[in-house]
Image (cartoon, helix red, strand yellow):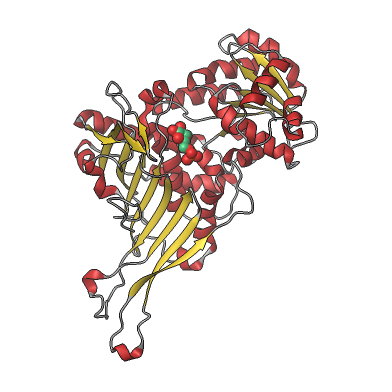
Length: 472
Ligand code: BG6
């Protein structure tokens, strides 16, 4: 396991909320090497002690700010204020850390990936077996993603590049694989003959909240669908890998992403909805809208088609939005009705086909709706009703997704990181949508903060969401 972590973007929001808290937990649980050290890099001027004091006041870990665990973490940190565009300055400051294999983590805007790489290379910090970790977004479209990739590849090869999608570090997301491939019951029916449709919903109550500049360029399509939502889709739809090693899984995910049918101008009106929240109320509090000047969506609903043998004709409805009434990350697999219906009650038109609902956030539950009858024989008729089989998953300890990903990057396990060809395949599909929207001049419908998107979105929302006062 490598024991040197260089963290670029150390004064940023992600670092305070997730990256340093993850390191704190890993150190506390003795999951990091004894000599583990952190080199924090940011733009703000601090000396080592100044940065440590600053971080102590800001780290969002729930831990007492003066605990021994925080002292331990802070004592391992050295800080450098650097301008990443200054390649020589970066090299001069950081080359002292090339004495041990390192992991450099770029939690910076993508326009800094290139100079940061050049500085790191000049410092000797990208020599094998050192590694590079990158935060999303990798580019803004296929062309820019390719340009970033070319820069990365000029400094190190793919086996040492770790692209983060933090959804892959979430335990319930990994559980999707366990469920799919650990159960005969599911494996046998996981295809178009038995599945009617699939819903993937990532609803957030949070808004754009201080990230207007970034968001105005990206919108929900690029911020959420290109990465998190498509990674969920890929895990649900991929063929069973022969083994669980990094490339076996990533080969299968890539095939699914490549099989996504590009959106055409003609499809845009039918298969997509864009929305932007205006003033409203979320969680009982007034929430301001995302200004009209931003020509970008905060809500998107898509009907995706995977053109391969397994999924022919099965719509995947993908929905994600900010400032929704409640937080919900769910995957719902809707099965087809049984082939021949022999019961009077309910009649064929009113049956409830089986449904598998996997809730990933905020709580982790799995619910399989089966049909059954509790009717006693003297009633003279068998009356069926949906019976949910409920499994609440109580993980022994909830961990931040980044904890798992940091450990894997330090160990060199790429299974939960996104490969170059997956990123490209995802962008190719996303580009087809943004092109179709541009050509079709797809409007952005307004929705009040605290509602489930613009009116047109209703057809895309699964009935597990408490839409319109709580259908279940
Ligand atoms: C990030 C997006 O990647 O994921 C944010 O940039 C979004 O806009 C966040 O809020 C959601 O992550 P989580 O773990 O809270 O579901």
